[in-house]
Image 1: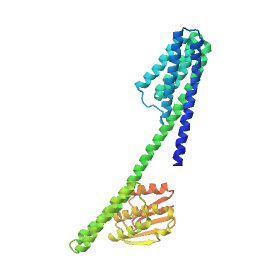
Image 2: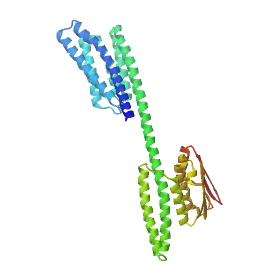
Image 3: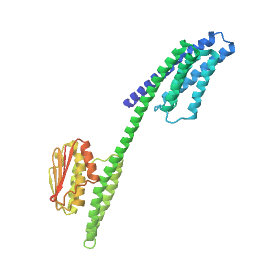
Image 4: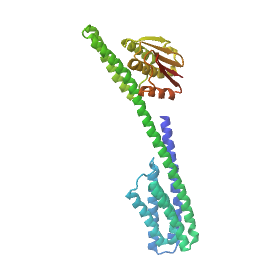
Length: 363
């Protein structure tokens, strides 16, 4: 909770700084106000200029506050509302030019950030550059060189605003890419976990179903027991899938070892176990549980083995069999296991030949 509060406070301070940096430029509106009040213009023209200046200041302040309140801040699409708003500000600048003359160029300084911030990046850059060009060109054409200072300031504001938009957009794009990659990684993890869970469970169900089919005519009581176990395995499989999807799945090495003994017994495979689950470093027990499940599933499904062995050590697990050997092509389960092991900083060694297959995970 403290972290969240600190983050909110940091965001609030950032917004306050942004508001201050954008609104401090309103001090430049003192020039048209002074000209309107002391320039000797007719009363009606002076009053109209003051009202236009105040309206311009209010519109500018509202646009900047709305912009910096938005966490994304970067406009992706060109809307008629933004174009109309910018056109209104430009119209006020032109009207001020007729009312108070060259001093109205100070308003153009404010149009620059509005165009850059309110429009999508490319149109915003172009529109802002056009405003800067006009602010520099008018004093040259009118030979009022003293007012070139407004154009120079507008140029600096344009560079600052364009740079802000560029780096903000780059950061947002990087954040979106990272979020998309995280979503894809999570989808792959869930798919991999479901494959691992269902592969083992369905293999056990298939073996017990075949056994129940053979026993149904010979020993109906034993067949009923196998059918009850099939029902239990099915329910466990459903629970496993649910917990995996919720990201709550944690394989226990001891439980996996007992399930391996049960599955190979049903398949008629002799099993030798060297070591215990407690011999393994606690940091690697979950990973080794996944490795054991995948290796035993492949043995029961594909190896046609008569004997298998499991060796458990502090930083290593090895599962081997005397079956038909490894074909050289890794399925989804082995690829997923390799990713898990490598992500944890370990290595997966998979060897096979006519004398069987050996799966070894070394941390």
